[in-house]
Structure formats: C-alpha cells, structure tokens
Length: 118
Image (cartoon, rainbow, N blue to C red; front, side, top):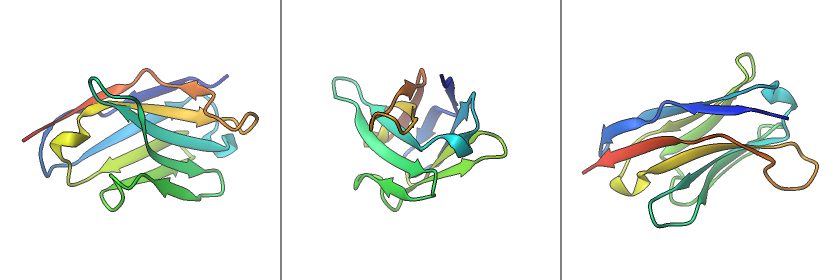
C-alpha cells in the first residue's frame, strides 16, 4: 500500500507558476513509476507527466516545455513545477503511483485544485 498526499495547489494568474508536491508513504526510490494527472470540470482525467525509477520522464504535449516533474527521494516526494500557466491548466491535479506489477497506476491521491485566472 502507498498513501499519496498532494499539496501546493491554489489560485494563480495566467503566466504565473506553482509547484505541486506529492508526499508518499513509501520510499519513492522504490516506486516504479510516479505520475501526475488532471481533471477539469466536465472533462475526463488526462495524463500530465510521469517519472520512472530510472529517471526516464515523459510529458503530455500540452505541458511539455512548461512543466517539470522530479523526484526528491530524500523526502519521498514527487514535485510538479508548473510555469507559464494558462487558464486551460485549471483542474484538479492528482498524483499516482505505479508499483510496477500490473502495468497501471495502483494508488492515487485525493487531488489538489489549481485555478489559473485570465
């Protein structure tokens, strides 16, 4: 079992920055893959970014060049640095962990709201 707790969401103006944090109850260095997803009102949840234990990183096209995912294994935390935010980035952002056993994300956080005003 892995408990995930997101923090760092809030209200920001377009063009601004926020850093989301996901604290894991287990060593992040032992988790195969960590990811960030988001869900806007009336829309399906969508992939944002992922980082593997070997430090491979992948981003969705919509955030590439603006968002940066990273691990802080000393703090068992995964960060999502978000720059040049746009109103369309407004969503609830979720952290997820893949234990590497089933090929999907096994654990999810409760989400944190990000609102970008124009």
